Image 1 (cartoon, rainbow, N blue to C red):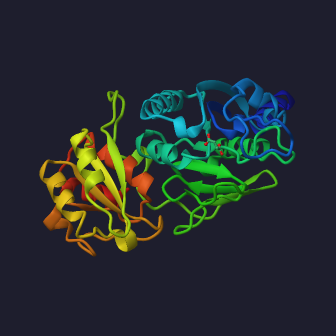
Image 2: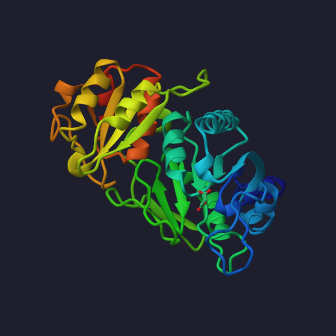
Length: 347
Ligand code: SIN
């Protein structure tokens, strides 16, 4: 009897001590950056520190997870390509299929992190947590934000509460859904916000606290499957302004774009100078999505522009770069405007 109690006690304590298995996939960015002085936080070199050094720099990580690291890319995030998206997404999917992996953290530059996050949010086939993390200051800065951000990201990726919440970005103590997040400031460390939708949660003193669930479909609920895709269709962006012209749209279509996101003034308007080029493009089967140049706001179908007449698609509440991500994935299935419009309601 005593022996049985002792065995049960050992099992109970080892369960309590069991740490989650988290894999860190590194891609570069400022979190792996290095400056010439401890006060430099602009003009430093991004993407120089490898994943092993990144993990060694935060010894506290050993207390919260069993970690392993892989270098998937080593670039500043403006150089993240759609080929890197596909490589990263396939690696995440294969890792999360393994029983001995509980979550994945991806270190990434902040410049295009929201696009990579939204892409993964649409193509990862798992409920397990996927957390993207970066830093606004290089590791050499006096008050580098990378180490604490990385700690918080690993904590979130290993937490049971994060299961089923889709891809998340963790920075500056905040947890933000990939669908909702926007980088709002080019320099400051409180740059990532979710101005329309609000934060998913927060990390305080090693505790991961969620406030809500994401509303739009994501990850395990998504209809997109990239397992056999090796190239994504080309989608470009056109910017609207006073007395703009259709020249850019004409050039994009002539050079082979399969889709264009038009960041229009106000509620994604299209000027009388642009509309003839838009109509020519959609008649050729090029998909055109309308988003707001303001970066925030809701764009409704057949409001401001007669979408059904011109064959265009309203971008809903997606930002311009994220609308581009969804359009690329949509075009892997169909260029039918009705099908594509539905996607902008769902995701
Ligand atoms: C980058 O996006 O790779 C550089 C800037 C950053 O990480 O903040």
